[in-house]
Image 1 (tube, rainbow, N blue to C red):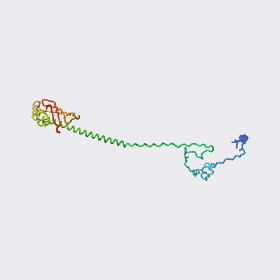
Image 2: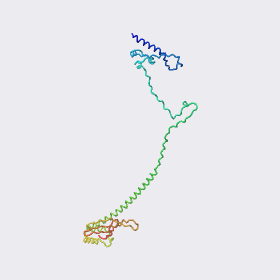
Image 3: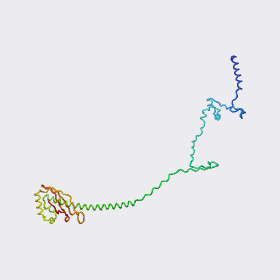
Image 4: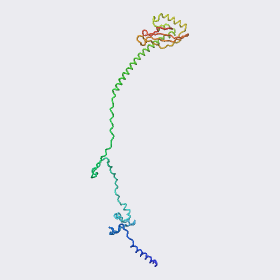
Length: 283
């Protein structure tokens, strides 16, 4: 039981609160004198919060859960909830920026036409290579000229060979007769040495006996021939034709005897196909 001094205070507070309530005006989201002033407010639906044990044992009312009357939904609701199928997002086709607008997309009224974009440019075709000129006639001409040049070279070579061969034979024949002549004098074979001279009568007044006497006297006076050196024969020009006269040569021989040394000038001629000494200044 409460003390008597507290009862008047509580009653006094209740009376004050009762007196203050009419002083406050209700809050409205619209003016009091508006069109919704006579609408009677309806109570909001009550959401029941049930314990977990009761939710597990109670049958699932999906419609009540979707309307928010049962909160929270039981775990079995999420397990049995069907997921909507997921379809891949299809990208819209890229518009053709070069295609002209169709009639359905053209605005009505003052229709303004637009010039279509020109198609993208293409590279010009490659020009065809020019036809190659035929140089067959050039090769034919070069071949003909080459044949003539080779033929001319062959003729020149053949002529040069004949000239050289003839000259070589002439020179070698004259050298051989001079070499044989002094080899016979060195060995005191005067008869063989005399056979290398021109036939009797070519050298004036020279017989084999006269030649043998002359060679013996020279060997006794200056000594026998110790050595000799032949020079290259030289030819003369034919005054009638102006060409070299290969049938007559002159040659110098360096003779060394035991007591003296000197040079001998010989004249040679080809007589009846054989080279002979036609003249000498000394033995």
